[in-house]
Image 1: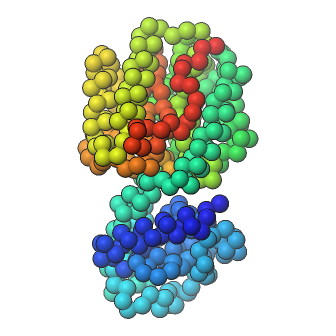
Image 2: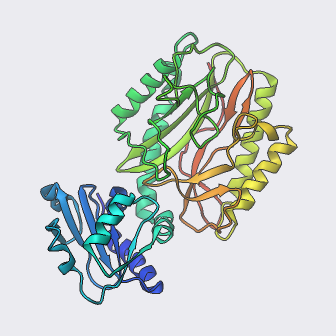
Length: 388
């Protein structure tokens, strides 16, 4: 559960940014942002003034919000006609997260607060959340330990001849019994994910998901993840899963095979490991994110695998790492065009992968923390291919 000291530090950081940008307060309505600052995910709206104490207005459940949250001022959401009176005349510029607030909600609050300027604080909010405290890093390590425990069990149940969906079901059952919450929260519009991927023969199929691997899925309405295809000996099995505990997400991938892999797939795996190692060494404050992606792409090209890097040829994703935390797609992103410098305490899933048409998908993924000495591995499990 979120501690009062942790919440206060987060709020202080936000208030400092609000003041520096001439914004009188932040009105947060997106659930995971509210959870980050308050410790409760109940249906509510959070007001954080640039000066003073925050107030949480709850629609449902008020009793649970009061039991869970570290915020002192928690009230029922007021009637519309009473809402404007809660904001003094000095409040003229209000920050809202435009990246996730629907237009209908924007219009609702603009109508409730006439005469005030509503401005975008999406970048401010995401930058604050990207840097993890020691308390958050402990939560992520806790998530990773449980996820790694399930990965270690895979040799007990993976067999040639089983369907991808049966493998996924077994893995996900054990992950849920371990206590994983299952909510893979994503901020990006039109992205969705059900816990993770268990794919083999269909791993290289293209799809909507903004990543290297999509899988066929079970229908055109759910075109992502495991299918009913049979897992064959000699074909790589890619397990790419999230572990979610107390809301905190870690992301990792391991490769399994019944039998052995071709020399070409082994070569691609070695390239993925080399790329991961090179990026981890440079996962330090002030290093530019785009430069890490360009380094990874150049290494893939030098290995003769440029066209296969991060997706099927012609379907390649243009990143090699993404921030994780309470959402799967947090900042920073190791991507082409993302020129922001890394900051100590940011947590990033690095995932160099290759799609080899006709043979399968190969690669690695681990979650790391940025530090002065380079990336610190959070998903502490051996990277080796597991041969059965």
